[in-house]
Length: 301
Image (cartoon, rainbow, N blue to C red; front, side):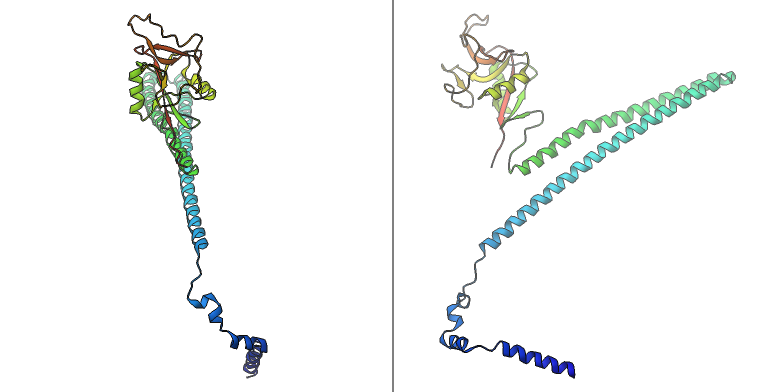
């Protein structure tokens, strides 16, 4: 009973605390809060900022989940590679132990010459079988290790694509430099055949726009003459991708281009190549040279 009485007193005190003063009563009679507060006019508060924040939070969580997934896959592949290496070391140790035991048995044969020939034949068969098994396991291990860099490259490419918001990785066996991907041949074709090859790869013959790009190309062409995407078959020098020639970077050799006419096949020199020293030279387009293809990376942002 005493506790109920105290609760009733507490409720009475709260009602006294919230009794409006004279000014407040006058304000209540003078104007209705429903007419002054836009909330009572049926205008719901807009929340574009809250919705935008929620959408960005969702995108960030999605990106985080994708990153975690890629990292987990990379860790799994790395773990598998380490496991394969451990198995290879175990096999190697097992073979070493077997060899040691074989030597011990050979030593024992000296004191048991009567059955030495039979024992040697048996040991030789066991050793050959062990070697065959070891070679098979080694081949399997090498196959896994051969595919591991490619799998890792693909995962790294996907991770880079995600972080860069749309930058496409270069294809396998293509080299990345600046904003382009490059492929260097190991065989020779005429200039026209090389240009067609690059087109089939959704690329074009190499176009050099700067000294930095020139140095990168020379590092990978070595001592071989290499076709580039520059020709004057239409009467004036032009780059195959439409790059402006007159004011763009050039690296012609001394007195080049000279349009020399002394080729055995006849005709003029209408196609450009990179020489072993890095300078450009005009050559007969039917000459068989190595070549280089270039394609822009797909940068969407």
